[in-house]
Image (cartoon, rainbow, N blue to C red; front, top):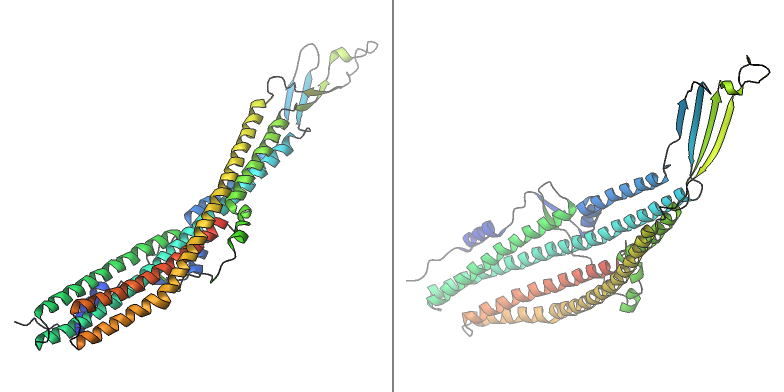
Length: 414
């Protein structure tokens, strides 16, 4: 008994129902759109900018006077009926300026922390966009393959009905079509996953499904590797560690300044002191007795040597981190640069040689099968090779775009 014929229109309708992603709330974004949104609302950057506010406030805290003036008033029964003393702390030996300088050095490091965070967010956003673009491209290739499988199934069934092909070929082509439709469903699921990942960096909470509106921008050529490597010292991770080293040195200077003696000025007055009445005029009003003195702290027990040693050690740690960051950035740059070159070469070979050859072989196989000169499995294999070639070409292009993003990340430019 010949297998039942399934109309192509019914096959296409069923496939579209299963394979097409929901498009009711799609939002098309470009790479530039994604980066602008990430720079504005990415959670990591929001936190980093909040830390900047704290660092700016710390500068004001460091510049605040360490103590308030104090006023003391008193009376006595034998001497002055009223005594008053105003004590004003004097910060004249550079302690306040050193504290402000240390806070500003820490603020500079925090600002570079934000640049480092942006460098990481930018790379993650670009990778997420490339992943979404690749998932959409693969899904498109899978859908095209499923359509071809449906058409081939109709052709095979017609041959089976007229006795030109065995029923086994109808079963085989039906299984291939079902596999192709399953691949489409899986590819559409990858789009949903990639869209969710990109939404995380864009802080998109409106529920819209993101879709890539353009190919990932990739330069055709890169400057020589040694030219790019010369820019490593300007990368934000290296500059951040060097800024932390400078901040540690400035904090050490602050600790040395805090070891200097503190001063205070005391101004006082004694009013109506009977002991000050002139001996020849006991009934006269006693003159006001004005007092002034300067108090100098003796820095004997608070030398702050341990604090200075700690900041020196912190500076050594930051210097070591700067060296490590430079080595790591140079290694990442070299790896990303070579990956970019390899992906570019692979993409050219696939686009110019492999894909056209696979398409030509598939067309020849279909024509040979129609003339009865080739087996069905040869046609199916040829079509599978075409799909795999297209998917591999997309993957090579995505790898090239991701490698370019890694080059930018290694350079750490703001």
